[in-house]
Image (cartoon, rainbow, N blue to C red; front, side, top):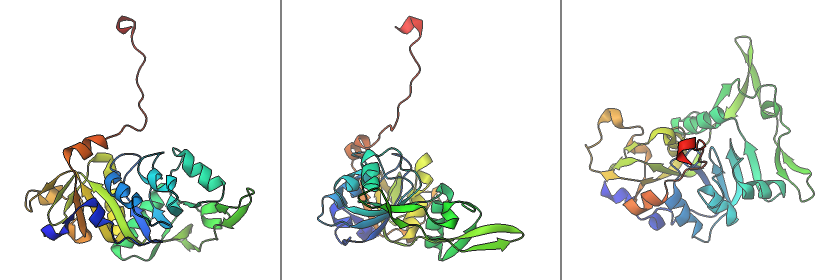
Length: 258
């Protein structure tokens, strides 16, 4: 299965303009930085992206934002990216804000052959009732608002119907992959990366370490290789250079340390 292993440039070479992309990671943990950089280097854009967050300025999906390659984002948390806010409020970017657990389940459903599902999250809010600003116009008015969603009474409680996410491509980072594409994720990056990987018709994985088939114990595999189509092995330098702390908080020095 060594044919799955490509360079980052080769792995993203056929992603066309207008493609939909599911991206893994949680904050700056486990973001597919190297393949995002390779995609940003190509002269294509107009992408729709599904991701828990939109990266930060200069990192992760923030690179695609800054180069004007994103037309739409379906996301849960976007508060750390100034360029994101600027593009959204100026009408350059369409944004569908989605509850965090809902976007996770939408991606999992897409990878599991489930077309839609009912959830109580969002009932009685703009999420279900519609009217959430998806896109502003240049004057600050709402150009596109979210439509109302179908609701249903189940066992005496109201649920809202959410559509599964099926993306053209998915971009994720794994801590360890074997040559068949079986993956292991590290800690927080496991929150969304396996789900994003499942949701893509073509899954591209950058792995911090690639091992031979059989080196990963079955119980240590978080996502089976059947979901993975392309593997990019990272160098130790690439791994080290992309280990960031999004916000560092320290205690003030004690009297003896001053």
